[in-house]
Image: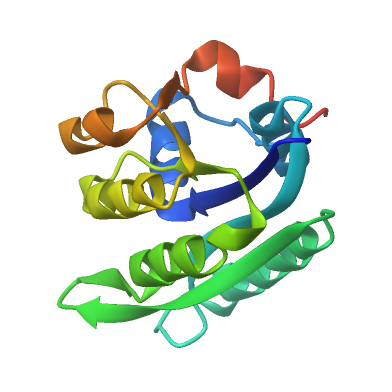
Length: 173
C-alpha cells in the first residue's frame, strides 16, 4: 500500500525561518510540498496563517496577502486555513492557528499514514504524541536552531530546513 502523507505548515514559523536564513528568497510552495512528499502520495497540504484584513494595516499589505492566498489555493492539494491577528499593544498575535493545525491533524488522521509538521514550535509536542499513539509516523521539518527540544523526543524523523533544502525550493525567477 502506498504511503499517504499529510503536510501541516505553520506559516509564521516557516516565514520566520526563511527570513532569518536568507533575504530575497521566494519560496515555491509547490516545490516545497513535493520535496517533503518525496515520491509518496500526498493526501493534502495545509498551511495555517493569520489574516491581515481585520487589523489596522495598510491596504497594500492586505491586498498582497489576498493575492498570496489566492496563489496558494491554486496549488493542487493545498488548503489555506485562516486564523486572525489580534492587537497586543504595538504588535499583533496570531489566534486560533496552532489549535486549528492540531485539530485538523488529529481529526484527519484516518486519511493519512505520515504527518509532516513544518514547525519547530514546542507547543506541538502533545500533537506528535497523540498522532504516534494513533499509529501515525511523524516527521518534523524545522531549522536545527529553531527546533524545540520537546519535538525531538516525539518526531520519528527530523529534517533540518537548512540553506540547501530551502534553496532547492526557491521559485524560478
